[in-house]
Amino acid sequence: MTANGVLVLTGPPCAGKSSVGRLLASDSSRSRGIYVEVDSLFSLLLPGSDRNRNDRMLAYDAAHVLARMLIERGQTPILECTYARHEQRASLVKAMADIPAAPLWVVEFYVSPDDAVERFRRRRQATDLDDQLVRERAETFPYSAQALRLESAAAAPQDLAEQVTTWMRQQPGSIHRELWAEAGNGWD
Image 1: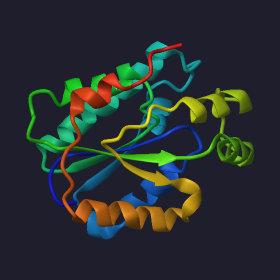
Image 2 (image 1 turned 30 degrees about the vertical axis):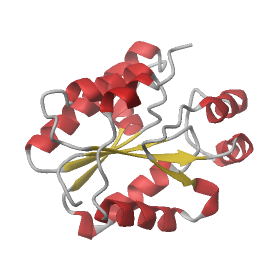
Image 3 (image 1 turned 90 degrees about the vertical axis):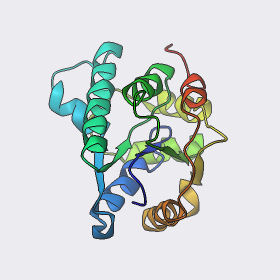
Image 4 (image 1 turned 45 degrees about the vertical axis):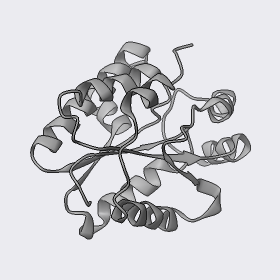
């Protein structure tokens, strides 16, 4: 990582965020980057959850507290989760409010609704999603003009991870935090 800030990997379900995040985390040249998969943190904190809105926000809030702690210790958290909701984005912005010099970089993974559903059907993990929800979330994801957008079907995860690494080496500017948060979807 080139600077001490937060890198967010975001996009609809089945867009390839986790695959790329794991590759970025395994790259030894990124020793200052610490990968935080919000869904894994959710499962650790609330193993019996029905994945309701309050529980989801608890997991995001916990990830953001952890991200703040990492920044304070000179690390760069790599947060991976959907971040489609305004409240999820606003939680991160609030956690970083008194450290305005820490950049917030966002990488959005685009996936077509058809590709998202096809990938979802190949998954073997427990989820509260179904084909219809995956399609809907791919169709309505709130992409941002400020983020680096990668089309997940255009390259293998390794190539996408390399694109992220190359982009980070160019020392991109921080997104405008509040505009990014406000662009999130409300809860259904």
